[in-house]
Structure formats: structure tokens, C-alpha cells
Length: 228
Ligand SMILES: [Zn+2]
Image (cartoon, rainbow, N blue to C red):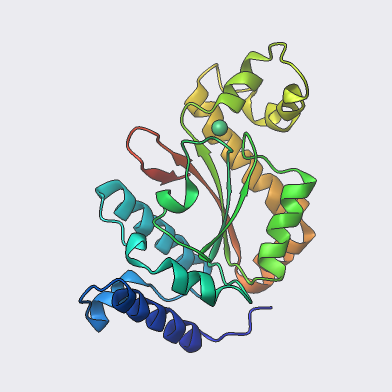
């Protein structure tokens, strides 16, 4: 379990930011360093707020994660990880999760599968994030023009095991009236609900520890994530 208290985490992140400024040869004030390296959000709402603010930085082109020193972050996470949120995303190459939320090494626990759906393997991964790593917020992230959702809607013959993906999305997309964006949003909501109801670990963590499972929609054109 995560055994760091908030103050210790804050101190470590702060020192990392300072080191990043020094290593990068940049003149960086303490307040700037702190701004670049937020404290690990302690609760679900704080974690969700950090995701929203990170996406805002991505959309506005004011990303700060590049200013962090990767070697320092890498060295500091060899022995343990303390991600503040988990994200289940589609495998689509146009959804680079860390970039979209302006985060770096050790910040996000990311699971990816085409159609961002809940399977036993994905559930197990997310349960690990919550039960072992202490993550308080899980985001199921759908995206515009999702090929997996589109293919499931068409239901056409496809080679190999691609059609094995369809079954997980069918309950969500059957009422989408052939609108891909609607289907993607419905699928993200459905998968979030499925996780809440099918995982005893996460259901308990929601009840006892205030863990939240939310869904979102990523717009490829604008870069913006809208929480659903
Ligand atoms: Zn997709």
C-alpha cells in the first residue's frame, strides 16, 4: 500500500521539480517549481481536478511536464510508483494519454485496449491500481472517431479475432442511432458503470475510501477531454 503521507509526497515532488530545474540548466524559482510539480492529489476530487487542469494545459499549449527531468523522475520511481489516477483508454494512437493530461513518469496508471472496455484482465489491472497503489480516481476515456466502436456498430466481417471486441461494446451502442460520437460516449459511461458494479474491490473502495470511477470523451480535433 501507499505508505507516504501527503506532506512527504509533496516534499518529494517539490525536490524533484527543483532538481529538474537545476539539471535542465534553467533558472527556476521555488514557486515555479512547485507550480510545475503539483502535490499528489490525496482524494478523488483533487485527482480529477488535476486531470482537468492537465488537459487544459495540453489544450492551451502550456504544458509543464516537459520541464520535469526525466532522469530524476525515472530514478525516483525505480523502487515504487505512486500514480494519482488510473485511466482506461482506447489503444488508438491519437490518444497519447500522458500528453493529453500533461503528465510524466509515475503519474498515471494507464490500461489500454481497443474500445476502452472492461474485461477481466482490465478489471484486474485497475483493481491493482486501487487496492495496491492507492489510486482514488479512475477515468474511462472514450474518443472521437473510435474505430473499434464504429466497427462494432457496423458489425461487418473482420479477420482473426477482431470481432471478439464487439461483444463488450454491444450493450452500450445498441441505442446510439448510428451516431459514432453518441456511441463512444455511451460506451464510456457503460464501461464505467460495469466496472463499478462488477468489481467487488472497486465497489468497496468507492464505499469505504471515496474512490470515484468516471467517464470522459476526448475530442481529437480540439484536444479537449469532456467529463461525461
Ligand atoms: Zn478507439
